[in-house]
Image 1 (spheres, rainbow, N blue to C red):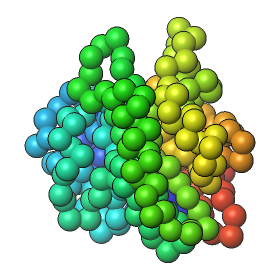
Image 2 (cartoon, helix red, strand yellow):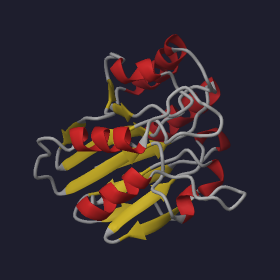
Image 3 (cartoon, rainbow, N blue to C red):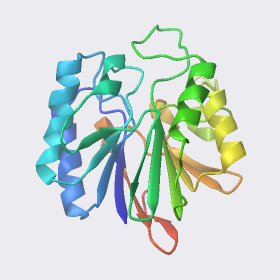
Image 4 (tube, rainbow, N blue to C red):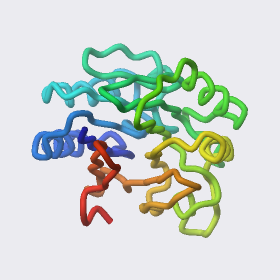
Length: 219
């Protein structure tokens, strides 16, 4: 399976159109969006932007970011699935998700306490099938990594996401939220990737077959 992953679109229609073109170019089987679809936008705007991706007829999985409306969790668009607090399986790959972010100094629209983040992660893990690959989609990166370090040197990722990874060791984690923290890091056996903001042209292609591989020269 080939998966195209992007995050932090922040309401730019041209970025969604470019992402759709990348999906078609790369013959992706699934598109993943790790949140911040809008930039403090409405549910209507988020629906419109996500609907652009359906022209490809490639399944879209997403979690809302902290700059998205919380009501996006319940969105119903054909070909687009919100996996906040849920899991879905394609072939031998199971995706589970958690959106939002821990509380910030900016009081953004979709923030959750660490307890609520863990609750969503546990809910997403209910009835998890025995798949070869388990991929966590989180808007917030795990705390205490290169992927949650701001330009001021502060670690602002989620403690609950970190704990979940340490205890459950999913195959892979994709996250976003901290634009300047593009990169990859391992927590135990789990590979964690922040693709960098899609609005800057960043994305990741991952291959999940007999082994897990990132597209060469992604970073």
